[in-house]
Image 1 (cartoon, one colour):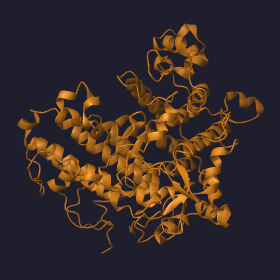
Image 2 (cartoon, one colour):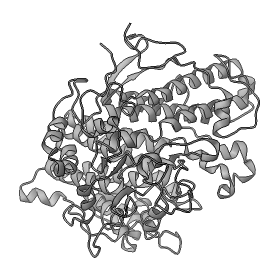
Image 3 (cartoon, rainbow, N blue to C red):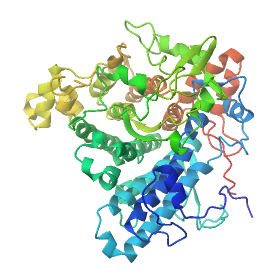
Image 4 (spheres, one colour):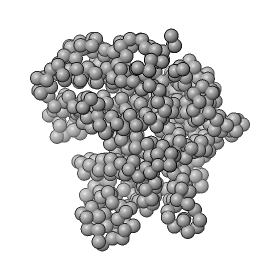
Amino acid sequence: MKKSIFPLFIAALTLSACNDFFEPETSDALSGDDYMSDLNEMATGYLGVLTKMQAAGDKEIYLTDTRAEMLEPTSQSTAELIALYNYEDDLSGNSYADPALYYDVVIACNDYIENMIAFHAAHPELIAQTDYFPGLLASALRVKVWAYVTLGEIYGQALWFDDPIVKMQDVGNTGVFTLLPMEQILERCINILENGYQGFSAKENFSWVAWIDPENVTNIANSTYRYWDQMTPPYEALMAKCKIWSAAYKERNGLNADDDYQSVLDQLLPFLDNEWQSFHHYWKRAGRTPTVYNNMYNYATPNQEESVSAIIYDYTKNQTNRLLYHFSNEYPNAYLLTTNEAARLRFEDNEFDPLGTQTIDQRLGRTTKQNGSIWYVSKFRPIGSTVRTNAYQDDVHVYTFRAAELFLWLAEACNHMQRFEAMDRLINQGFTSAQYEMLQAIQEGVDSLYTEKQLFNYRGFTTEWTCPSSTDRYGMYTGFRTCLTLADVDTWDETKLQEGYTLHQIMRHNDELIRNEWVLEFPVEGKTYPTMNRMAEHYNDPTFVSDIVRVKYEANGMDGMIASKIHAHSPITGLPGYWVPWDLQVR
């Protein structure tokens, strides 16, 4: 028998695991196929799914950022991390490269979904007593989609299965497992999000506040449980991410992707509007944005001004990850990875990052600092932090979706729909009061006052983008870069056609600028490398990865070798070299 990548996994989530997580007040036992027998167990069972998310939460950071533009091993690093950094072909046995933790999430989701559907069929009288069932089942479906999209964006492929895997399985069993490339993973994920599973929707939401703390439903800010609701990725962000990936493959294959790009706008524009119309008005790139970076991670809880969803931990409940262990140079941490000098210099390079009146992009200082002569990743806990007083308190949250991602996806969608003016506003100058009347008229359907170009660019954008500070404490959306007092990047529009450029060249130029914004905004967050992979897939051009990554290898003379590895196909998987090569042992 072929060796399975899955350890023996009993598909029953025990209550002790749930207690370690949120300590729900129940003595019900969860064991075996019949573990779900009452309404409380619907919720406590889902907590078991979230514990698997916790276990995998920080993995993508070590696995992808070590190969990306910012990180390099320290003299204290390990052979496994150095192998990732060196783009070694054979990563067998490498615990960082092993995808098992993501498959654990899938197994937990499959088990929970199967038991929830069985419970629904067996106990309709109990289901009728609660309105929580749809949201809990939809949440598990979305976590499964999150796990598969994460697998795909790291490895370029994954084994798809809907079975809960209650016994050891041969991965060659095609009746259970199907090896899918990223393009087909997306098709299945989008199908779940759009159509649900076995008649159950993936769009519904579940509120822990409503279940555990109902007296604060109308005053969520007073509930300590509000952070629990951030653990499940929201439908809109997941769908937008799937669609921006799906569009990349369609265009690579010569197909029209306008429907996918329009879907990105259709998901995110109302999603942002709803947030901005709420009592807190979070998620806006505005004058307050620079202060958000001060406590993006160095904070006891996810920063609500930026957090769309996040995996949370609690050191006092033994819920930890290993971010400080890897990046802090304070005892008892190992200080295995640090930041690269060439990568740091990008933040003061006027060509890569036009600085305007600044001498350095302030985001660098929120990412890395010097302690004497030693550079270390400071974003998770700067030395002297009063939030996590002890350097061993390794419970920093991990953002699965940040608001900044939404704006860059919107910009990319606008670019490919040739809505270049809207794209430029998203990236550069943002909106001012001068656009208020135009957005209001378009919003109200008064089209005759404005040009076809204006209508084309701004349909879907509302006056929320131009709200003054008198009605919105964050004020107007002032642009992805302008809110940081940075100069504009040189976006291109249709006028470049008169200079002999093609639409393809215009869009590619803008995508390169958008890629650069990902590099500057998300270092050491497990987000830059997957984005570069996506653009490499889109244009069938690995230079989208190698042009950024190779720079950090120039000092040790490895830049040419690393670029060659990125451009080649893996002898292990046969896939392009930017994907992490892991042998799934399917022959």
